[in-house]
Amino acid sequence: MEGKAIDYLINEQIRDKEVRVIGVEGNQLGVMSISDAMGVAEEAGLDLIRVSPNANPPVCRIADYGKFRYEQMRKEKEAKKKQKSIDVKEIRLSPNIDMNDLNTKINMARKFLTKGDRVKVTLRFRGRELAYVNKRKEVLDDFAEKLSDISVIDKPAKFEGRSMIMFLAAKK
Image (cartoon, rainbow, N blue to C red; front, side, top):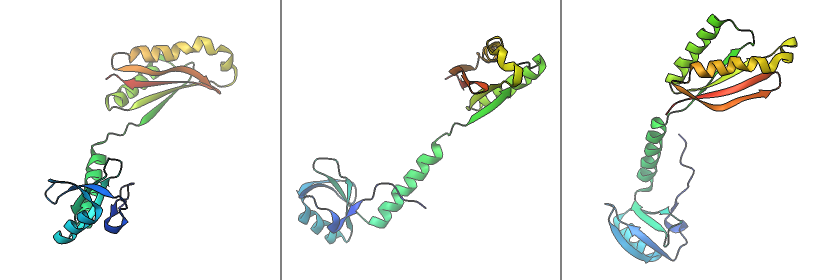
């Protein structure tokens, strides 16, 4: 398991003169010198952990360091579980695609969009097809129009190399 990016300073590693101390039950013990805070932590048989170094004065908590790290990692894991990753699904078209084939591709895109994924629509040109790029942009426009009830154009059609690319995203 990986720890959090922030490494907490504990006990003698803390070099601040004054710190705001939070007790074992989460109650505020107030602002005190580092030596007084260390004494309170030693009395309780626990560690002094600097949890917020940017505050003025820095905030330290009295707790068992191992248990504290475990709690932080568990919170991170829970937050990660709740995140929804958005995938980009690609659909490739050719400039002279038949209407039935286009409808099949549109249904696939509709399925991806309802799942919450973004769709990258690629219109690939080969050989002489490159001479009629402007006429074939209508294939992408038609594709976007038929999905306009559930999607919005995220990035409009743009020519890159031998293909024209457009991104669609689900409506919020």
